[in-house]
Amino acid sequence: MPVKSKHIHFVSSGTPEADQATKTMIAKYGDCQPENADVIVVLGGDGQMLQTLHSTMNPGNMDLSIPVYGMNFGSIGFLMNAYNEDDLHTRIETAKANSIHPLKMQATDEKGNTHTALALNEVSLFRSSSQAAKIEIFVDGKSRISELICDGVLLATPAGSTAYNLSAHGPILPIDSPLLALTPISPFRPRRWRGAILPNSATVQFSIIKPKRRPVSVVADNRQYSNVAQVTVKEDRTNKVTLLFDPGHSLEERVLNEQFKF
Image (cartoon, rainbow, N blue to C red; front, top):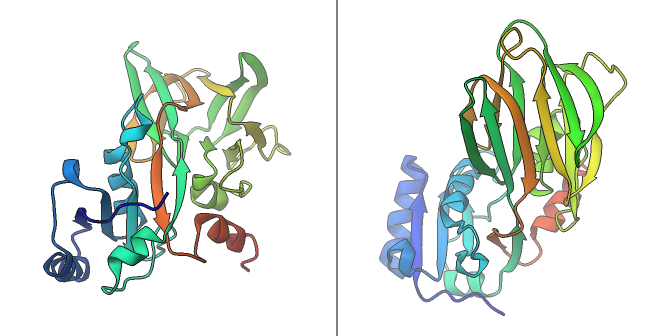
């Protein structure tokens, strides 16, 4: 079913170029409040797109997710389309929709406080001192690595597999695959372990060994928590976001292209 485009809400990343383009688009197509919009149009980069997508999520009610169409005014623009001020309604209505389910993270810190967050790209754990982190990894309740000595470790969605996960030498996952990428960051022991591909039904638990001596922080997209003792991550199937891409430039095609870049 084509996405409606009558009521549009525009979002700018705040750079001079994006602000000027936003003013031009509003003058041409009008603007409405996000709660009344059929679609949100983001003018900026991937960071602004992620921030906007987080604002559209509605836990437990996927039908309320507002589609988001991006125009690139950033450096990479992996989640964006090319900027063009003409025929916006047609571009939106003919765009291909990609739905992404976020990861739900629950972290417990050393004081026993619990923190929850959603991540569309990845949940990452990092050492917070000069000493390497020591982390035990459980998958569906079974210990798979009793002691990973590393700078960190991350769990990425297919959409996030081309981001930090790829920089950490993790695998690129097809966007519609029911998979997650578990990737170590600068692993020291086990030296030959390069990560794992897991089903998206898996529950992954990270237990920090000696968290006071070897402190670890966790980051879910852009939300960070320090001095964690345990982190549990699972895909949230009750929630989703919807991205729109011009024909011929779908997210599937972009993920495929990433695998043939040199």
